[in-house]
Amino acid sequence: MKEGWEYRKLGEICDFRSGFAFKSNKFTKIGEPIIRISDIQNEEIDDSNLVYFDPKSYTEDLSKYLIYPDDILIAMSGGTTGKIGINTSNRTYYLNQRVGVFRENKKYLNHRYLFYFLHTKSEESLKIAAGAAQPNLSTAQIKSFIIPVSHLSEQQRIVDYLDSAFAKIDAMKANAEKALNEAKALFQASLKEMLEPKEGWEEKTLREVCSLITDGTHHSPPNNESGKYKYITAKNIKIWGLDLSNITYVSEDIHKEIVNRCNPRKGDVLYIKDGATTGIAIVNPLEEEFSMLSSVALIKPNKDVLSSDFLCYTLNSPSIYNQTRNQMDGAAITRVTLVKIKGFVVYIPPISEQQSIVATLDSLKSKVDRLQANYNKISQECDALKQAILRQVFE
Image (cartoon, rainbow, N blue to C red):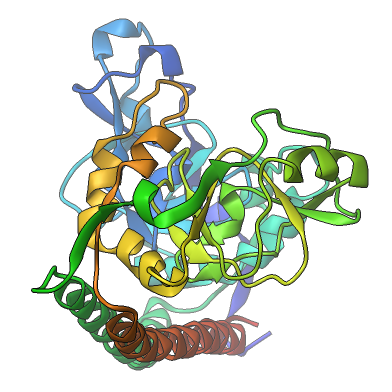
C-alpha cells in the first residue's frame, strides 16, 4: 500500500445503482429519453439512436433513475460489460436496466479520479461476468471493487497527470486518423471524378455487357465450421475485400447443387444484393470453388468489353451505390432484385482507358489500406499505453 493511502470497497464511498426495466413495447419516438447499453459509445452518450417513453405509462417513481450531466455510467451485461461512459451533455436521461450509474461521495473521491479508476476494471468486469450464456455484472460485484483512496489533493494531482498524458496519446491517434480520413476523401473524390461519363464512353446496361448475372442458393443449407467448400454470404463481403475470419463450409453434395446455377470464378464480381450492406462489390480473389447464398449476386462481365476491376469500382461509386439503395424493396429483409441489377446503366470507356483508371484508383486505394492498417496499429498501441499508465497509477 502506498504511504497515506487506504483501500476501500467502492460501495463504501460511492453510491451505485442499476437502471429500471423499461418495457420495449412502450418505447416511443418522443417523450423522455432512455439510455441503453448501446447508447454508451466512445466513453460518452451517443444520442443518435435513442428511444423514449411516456411517463404516464408507468406508476412507479422513476426520479431515482435519472442520469444527470457528468454522471458516470457502466454497461452491466453483454459483450461490452464494463464499458464506461460519461454524460458530457447538459441533458438528463433515464437509466435503462443493465446500465449502472456512479455518484461518488465527494468527501472521499474526485470525480475524474473515479472515472480513470473504473477504466482499470474493464478487463476484470468481463472476467467476473463471463461464464454465463449472457454475461452479467451485478450491483454487489461492482460495489465490492477495491479502490485505492488518497487525499483529494493527491487524487487531483493524479487526474492532472493522466489528463495530460492521455491528451498526448489521443493526439497521436488523432493525427493518424486525420491522415486516413484525408486519404479516404481523396479516393472518394477521385472515384467520382474518374468515373464521370466522358466523350467516347458507351452507355450500356449490365445485361448487355455481362455473360451471367445470378445469385446463390435461396435456401440456406446446413453449414459448419469445417468442410470442403467455403460458404460465402453477405457477411463475408466488406468494402475492402473478402473477409474469411468467420467463414463456414458446406458439404460436397450441397456445393454441387448450388454451383450448378452459380459458379463463381476468380476475377468475377461479387455484389451484395440483400440486407443492410447491399450495394458493396468486390472482385473474387479465390482460385478455389465455393458456394454462395442468395444475398450475394454473381456478375461475370464480358472481359473484352468490361474489366471486373472497372466494374467493381463503378458499382462502388456514389452514383451507382445511391441508385442501388434507392431501389431496394422488402419488409423484413430489404433487397435489390436481379432484374434491377441487370438493368443498371454503366458507362464504359475503351479497355485501355479502363486499365489506366483502375491503376490510378488501385494506387489511391492502396494508400488508404496502408493508412488504415497504420491507424489500427496506432490505435491498439495507444489503448495499450493508456492501460499501462493506469496500472502504474492504481496498482
